[in-house]
Length: 108
Image 1 (tube, rainbow, N blue to C red):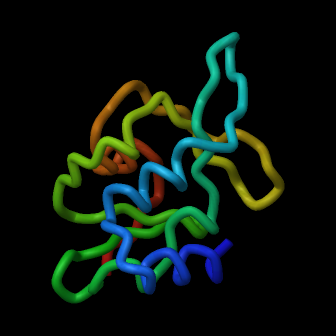
Image 2: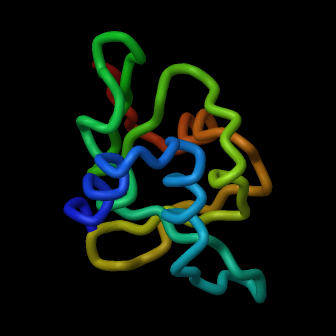
């Protein structure tokens, strides 16, 4: 997935259209509601400049320190662990700052 994402960025797609493509699929159903999936391939270390943005991590998941109101990130969405289990769900929010709700986040 990372190779495809880098290809899209290299082809001058905007971050918002890229994010929309990433978050449009796949999905998982939790309590009868379809959630967009966030996994360790969806977010990665070098997507943003960590020194400028300030990143937090949790078992392969990250969040930007600044609010990112990008349409492609609107939920609901679910975070999965490396085994594919749902570890958290998030409502219809337009930013990734909701990751602070996850426990044991360490910031760089």
